[in-house]
Image 1 (cartoon, chains in turn brown, green):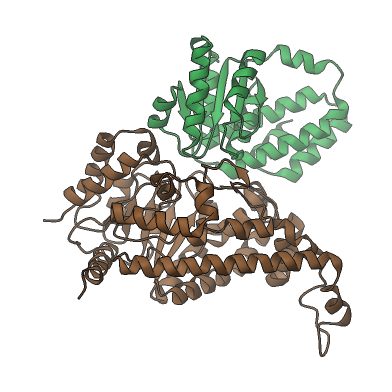
Image 2: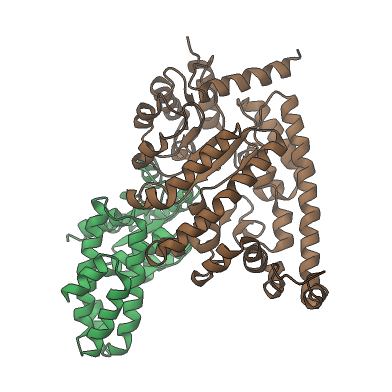
Amino acid sequence: MSSSAQLLQEREKRFNDAVALNKPDRVPIASVWDFFPARFKGHTVKEVMYDPQLMFNDWVECLQHFQPDMGENPYGLRGFARVLDALDYMHLKWAGHGMDDHQGYQFVELEPMKANEYDHFIFDPSDFMIRRFWPRVNKALAAFENLPPINQIIPYYWGLYSGAFLLSPEMEAARGALMEAAKASAEVLKWAGALGAKLKDLGFPASSGGFAQVPFDTLGDLFRGTKGVMMDLFRRPDKVMAACEKLLPIMIDSAVASAKRTGVMRVFIPLHKGLDGFMSDQQFHRFYWPHMKELLNALIREGITPWVLAEGSCNTRLEAFRDVPPGKVIYHFEATDMFKAKEMMRDRCCIRGNVPATLLSVGSPEDVKAYCKKLIDVCGEGGGYIMDASTTLADAKIENVQAMYDFTREYGVYK
Amino acid sequence: MEDLVKAVAEMMEDEALDLTRKLLEQGESPAKILDAYKEALVIIGKRFEEGVYFVPELIMAGEMMKTASELMKPYMAKGSSAAVQAGKKGKFLLGTVAGDIHDIGKDMVGMLLDINGFEVKDLGVDVPVQKFLDEYSAFQPDIVGMSGLLTLAYDSMKRVVDGLKTMGVRDKVKVIIGGGQVDEHACKFVGADAWATDAVSGVKYSLQWMGC
C-alpha cells in the first residue's frame, strides 16, 4: 500500500472513530478554511475567486502544510465568482463585486418571496423557483418573471404563445446569461474534480459531499428574509409550516443525490435561525426541530453522516439535539458551552469545534494552546471529539492556526 | 390604554393596530398612545431578559412600533418633536462598521434605544472609520455603538477607537460593541468599554452609563 493510501485510510478511521464515539489514536483535527489558504499564500480573495488554477495551488499547499485529517474542496462555495457575475447574483456581495479584494463574501438579506406568495410556492415550488425566485435573485434573469406558467398543460406542446415567448428580445439576454453561467459552472466543476482527485492522492479524505439546510433556515435565509420569516411566525404560522413541509423532501433528495454523486457520505448542514435567542423553545419545537430531526434521520438512513454546524450558541437546544441515533451525527459548535455539550452528548454524538474565532484572530499562540488543552482534556476524554475552530478560519492569524494544529497533534494523542 | 399595552406586549398585532386607530379617531393624544407602546416595550424587554421572548418578538415589536408611528403622524402637533428631543436621555452614535453589511441586530438596538429615550443617529452599514470620527465631532454623542457580525469587523472597530484616542476624546465617550460573535477577547482587542451579543443587554449598559 502506498503511503498516501495508508494516510487516507488512517485519517478516515481516526475521523470515523470519533464520530462513532470510539477512541481514535488521537483527537482528529480539521477546519473550515474559508479564504484562509489564499491569505496563507499571499493572495487576495478576489484573485482566487476568479482564478481556479490559483485556488487549486493555494489549497493544495495550505493543506499540505497543515496536514488536517480532512481535506476541503472550496470550489462549490468559494470558487464561483464567474458564475455569479454571469447571473448578476444579488444574494451575495463578493470581492470584486461590492466587497474589498481581501474580504470574503457576505450575504445580502432579500425577500424574493413576498408574504402573499406562500400559496404559489406551496402549490408548485418549481414554477415559483423559475418564474419568481430566479429572476429576483439573479438580475440577469429578470425576464423570467414574465415567462408563462411552467405548469401550463396544453396538449402536444407547451402552447404556441409560451413557446414563442422564449424567442422574445427580453428572453434573449437572459438565455445568454444562463449559457454563460452554465459554461462558468462547467469550468469550476472541472477544477473541483481535479482538486478532489489531487487531495485523495495526497491522503486527505473529503470533508463533505453535499449540503443541506433545515427547511425553516432555507425559508428564512433565501425566500422570506430574516425579518420576513420572523414576522410570519405570528402572522401566518400555518403557511410557514406548509412551506417547510414542502421544502423538507427537496432538501433530503438533493443532499442524498449530491453525496452519492461525489461518493463522499458526509453532508454539511449549517444552522442559522433555530439557535438560542432566535426563537422560543415552543417555536423551536414547532417550526424547526421536527424538520431538522427528519432531515438528520433521512440522511442517516442513507448511510450519510450529517455534519451540523451550530452557529451562535445552542445551549437550550442540546436536549433536543440528543434525540438522534447514537454515533451518527457530528455537532460542530460555535459558542455553545462546550463542556456542557460534552456532558450531554457523551453517549450520543461526536462534538466538534469551539476554538473561538475571536481568539484565533486577536489572541496569541499561547492563548490558543491553553484553550485547546482544555478542549482536549474535557471534550476529548474517551473520544467523540474533533478539534476545530468555532466557525471558519476567515480572519484567523496564521501562527494561531499553526499552534492549534501543532498542539493537537502533540497533546491530543490517546494513551 | 391597558388593552393596548396588553395587545402589543402579547404580540397581538391586529388588535394593537385596531386599538391605535380607534384611540386616535376618538381624539386620544398621540403622546399618550406612544406611552402605552413604551410601557409594552418595557414588558417585552423584560420578557426577553427572562428568556420568554426572543428575536422574533423584538422584530415584531419594532414592526408594530413602525406602523403605529405612521398612524400617529397625521395627528402629531407641529413643534412637538423639538419638545421630545429636549427630554432625551443621551446621544447615541450607531452603525455597522466598515466591511460588514449586517443590520438586523443594529436596527433592533436602534429601535430599543429610541423607545428608551435616546437620541440615536444611525449611520447605516459598512460605515467607514473616518465617517464614524467625523460624525462623532458633528453629533457629540455620549455613547458610540459599533455593530458587526464578522470577525473582520474587529479591525474596523479598533481603528475607530484608535481614532477617538488620537482626537483626544476617548475618555469623554463610552464605546460599546455588539454582534453575534463578540466576546471579551474582541472587546479587549478593540478597546471598547463593553460588549453585547443581544440588543437588550446593549441598551441596559447604555442606560446604566447615563445614570438611568
